[in-house]
Length: 197
Image 1 (cartoon, helix red, strand yellow):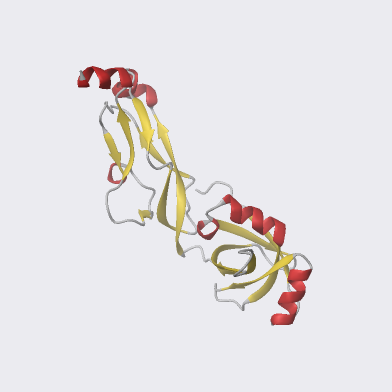
Image 2 (cartoon, one colour):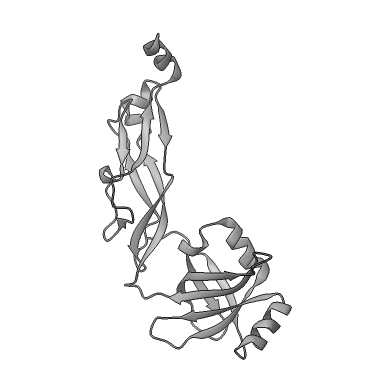
């Protein structure tokens, strides 16, 4: 199941339209809207500083958030768009979409490597070269895996680990159709130079 889903704290925006949005920006907030999930759209304000911190952290558009709004029950949301100022490139509006537990979304999932000691290639001095520490998967909102596990048992120098070699959690599938490389075990530099001599 999913690890910690980060909280996104917002307040209800009173009034709609340009005037209310401008007032929110003057107060140090970014106006936004929460839609979907079979409910009425909800106008909200997000703290400008908190939003900027999350945007700078990266992957804002593919992170699932737990939206907390006073007077409303917590709901899982994913960002569907951030409008930015054309000159300053700073956020001016955010669109968030409510998710049902059955909704399918694309998220980056961490890759964990286990059983290093059971890999003959690593025992001989080989190096694990991680090509993709995270993999984008299409998952169900109600069953988001915390990570995917790559077992290194029996892996030798020169072995390449593809996404097709990894057992994915039930219901998860890669967003990319091809069998891409996640990692490989390369020879230590001493062996490589001896081979080239």
